[in-house]
Image (tube, rainbow, N blue to C red; front, side, top):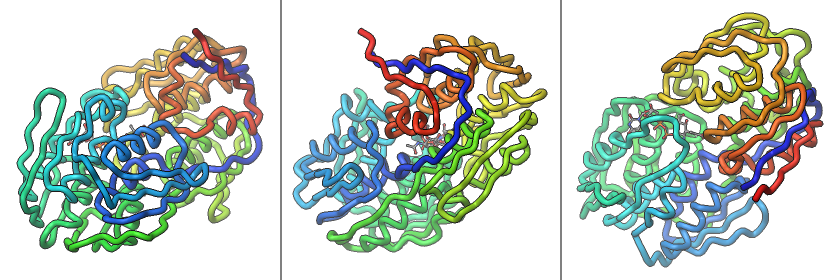
Length: 420
Ligand code: EPU
C-alpha cells in the first residue's frame, strides 16, 4: 500500500503542464473498437484507468502499443472477443463505454458491470434505455450486462437526466446504426465534444456536440490510419487552479483550455484570486485572505462536481461562511470528515455542506475516499501546517499522472512511500 507523506505550509509557485483528459481518453480508447483499422492517439494520459482500458482492449483482440509515454496505437482489425469480464470492468467506471462501442461494432456483447469511485448511487438506466431505443435487447445478471441487436436503427431519445456516460455511450452505439439518431437533453462537457471530434475525424457524422441536442447520421464504416490528439484535462487544470488559490500561490498552468474553466474562474475571482488568460495557458495567483462564497455543482457549463472537493479545501480556510450544494452525486462530502481531522469547521448533511473558514489547516493522517477527494486532500496537506500522511493514493493514480512530481516542481514537499 502506498501513501504520501506531505510536509505542509507551502505556497505553490511555478509552472505545470496539464495532461490529456482522463474522461475523454477512457471513452476514445473504447471508441476505437468501432474502427476496422489502426488509430494513433496522442496526448493520452498515462494513468491507471487508461492502462486498464488498454488491457481490456487487448483481451478483446485489439493490438495496443504505446509508442511513447503519451502515444498509443490501437489496431482493431482483428477482434477476437466481445466479452469484457467483470474482474476487469469492475476496476473503473468508464468500462460502460465498452457496451456502446462493442454493440455498435459487433451487435452482440457481454460486459461486466462497471465499478469506479463510490460517490453514491451510480445507475446506468439511461444508457440501457438508449440502447433499447436503438433496437438492442439488454439483460442484466450475475454481474454482467448482455446486449444484442441484429440491426441497430437510428432513433430519437430523450434523456431523463443529463448524463455524461449515457450521452457518450449512445453516440458510440449509434455512429454505425442505420439512419439518424437524435439525442435530447445531453451532457455538454468538453470530453463529449472531444469524443465527437475524434469520431468525426475517423468518418462519423455527429453534429451538435456541446449543445443540448446531438444528431448522429449513421455511416457504414469508420476508417483507420488517423491520428488524434486528446483534449487537455479540464479537471486536472481546475485542480491546479484551485491549488494556486488555496495555497495563496502563483501557478502558470500550461497546455489547457481557458474557456473550459469559466465557472471555476468566476469562483476564483469571487474568492479574491487573480486569473490571466494566455490562450493555451492560465496563470492563477492569490495573496491575502480568501473570501467565502456559495457553490452549486451542475452539469457543464455549470460548476463541475469533479472540482467540488478541491474548492472545498479553499473554502475551509476562507474568511467567513460558505455553502456548497452538490447536485450531481449523493455521497461527495466524505473528504470533509478528513478536513475536519485537520481542523476545518464543516457541517455536511446530505447534499449540502457548510464551511466556516478557519485560519489554518493542521497536518494529520487522512484517507482518500475517491479520486477527486484524494486530489483535494493532497492540496489540504500541502497548505496545512505540519505533516500529513495521505492514504488510499491509488485513487489519485487512477486519474492524475505523476501528481507528486507536478506538485513537487511547484514547491510541495511530497514523498511517495510504500508501506507494508
Ligand atoms: N444518472 C442516472 N442514470 C444514468 C446515468 C446517470 O440517474 O443512467 C445520474 C447519476 O446518478 C448522476 C447524474 O446522472 O446523479 C450524472 O451522472 P453521469 O452519467 O453524468 O456521470 P458518469 O458518466 O458516471 C462522469 C465522469 C465523472 C463525473 C460525472 C459528472 C467519467 C468516466 N466519469 O461520470 O467523473 O463526476 O460524469 O460530471 O467520465 C471523476 O472523473 O472523478 C468522475 C467521477
